[in-house]
Length: 217
Image 1 (spheres, one colour):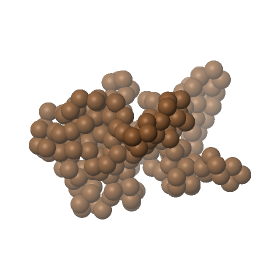
Image 2 (tube, rainbow, N blue to C red; image 1 turned 180 degrees about the vertical axis):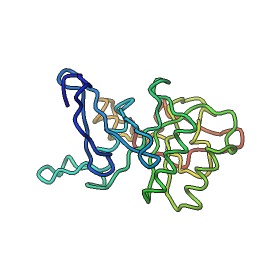
Image 3 (cartoon, rainbow, N blue to C red; image 1 turned 30 degrees about the horizontal axis):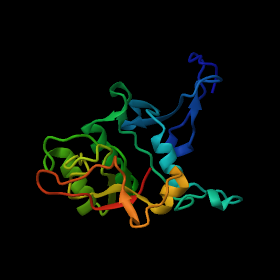
């Protein structure tokens, strides 16, 4: 931490070793950590491009011993955070970022991957990104979950990587209980659950559809 003066920075170790996080001081919300690659030749200063990953990590692994009602679905699970959003592209992901992240997950021995990014695609099953997703599932024995996207409700709005056959692609639905609790809507007596209007839908040009739907919002 500090006051934005980078002439006398605090010494930091790579996050993977010491879990150290720095910030630019009072009045700023920019935190960062460092990683070192290529045997010490490459220093990477990592900052967030958005807050979505933080709240998803809380849903998954939040752990409060004194307040279990605030726990995530897998309290205390270990999480490897891989940044694929490029701040120069308004946090959009790149193919290089996706491939590097999947390779990092393999190196760390991850069992499960959650991915909330998605973009329109020109060619689904083809290229290095698609092949790396296939390798992650079929060769590296990872379970890969990706969102269908938020481009609905029209048909054929499913984006990439949700259009690929290797990942499990998840759309969003709302139950009648959620309608009443979260949106003060009258529950529909004849509708137990329905897809959210925004969730992307298939089919893709090759006929692929989302694998399943889960509570969204």
